[in-house]
Structure formats: C-alpha cells, structure tokens
Length: 132
Ligand code: GTP
Ligand code: MG
Image 1 (tube, helix red, strand yellow):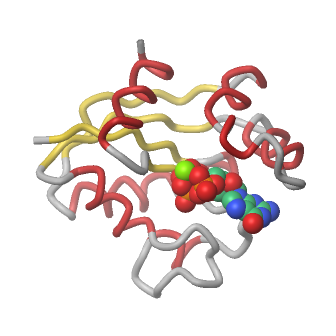
Image 2 (cartoon, rainbow, N blue to C red):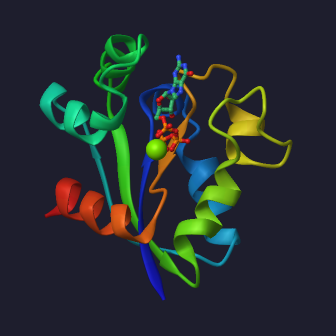
C-alpha cells in the first residue's frame, strides 16, 4: 500500500469539477485518506515547484496556483503513485489521452486540473509539506 499527494487545482475547483474528479479516484479503487480545501500561499507553491523555478512559465504557474482554492488530498492504495499518474494523463492536456482526468477536463498546460506526486519519495515529501 502506497500513499500519494493529490491536489485538484484552482481551475477545476472554480469550474466545480471536484466531485467528478473525486469519483474517478474512488472508482479506480484508491482511497481518500485526507482531504481539505484551502488557498495556497505563494511561498508553499514556490517550494513545491522549485524544480521549475528557472522556467519562463514559472511566474504564471505561481499566479495560477494561488488564484483560488485547491482541494488537497492524501490518496492511498496499491501502486497509488503510478496509478494516479496514469489516471491523470500527460502534463500537457493536448497530449493527455481521452479517458484520463486531464484528457477529459483540461485544455491548458498551465491550468491542467490536477497534481499528483511523481515518485514515492516525492509523495512522502509533499504529504509532509501540505499536511505535516
Ligand atoms: P504536476 O502534477 O502539477 O507536478 O505536473 P507534472 O508532474 O505532470 O509536470 P511538472 O512537475 O513537470 O510541471 C508542473 C506544472 O508546471 C505542470 O502541471 C504545468 O502546470 C506546468 N508546466 C509544466 N511544463 C510546462 C510548460 O511547458 N509550459 C507551461 N505553460 N506550463 C508547464
Ligand atoms: Mg510534477
């Protein structure tokens, strides 16, 4: 059993997609262990996306992620990290397959509906960062 950190991003919360996204997570057999709606502060977002700090889109990414409430979660289950990444689809919604969360709900690489940890190691770090 693994735990991963998932966040429904401000665009999807604003568009009232939270319920449909949670439904997909639960239908895949994963369990929501913790869940909270909150507004992220700029510092937390900058640390969370520190690996992208030198990218040209970094300022717009920080502005987007602080533009409204997110729904943050700890999700658990067998292979939860990779299972969620598969369920989410590719980072760029243009490349995300139909049937994935990004493929079905996202149109914009900056506003791409959902975050999921990319490794077990980062999952532990992110769970501590957002729920510690
Ligand atoms: P997260 O789950 O949000 O971490 O996405 P990811 O792991 O699929 O991608 P990554 O960590 O590489 O990038 C984090 C976020 O930065 C993405 O979700 C996008 O919103 C944004 N991003 C990544 N690459 C690009 C890009 O080339 N252009 C733009 N505008 N945004 C990007
Ligand atoms: Mg990432």
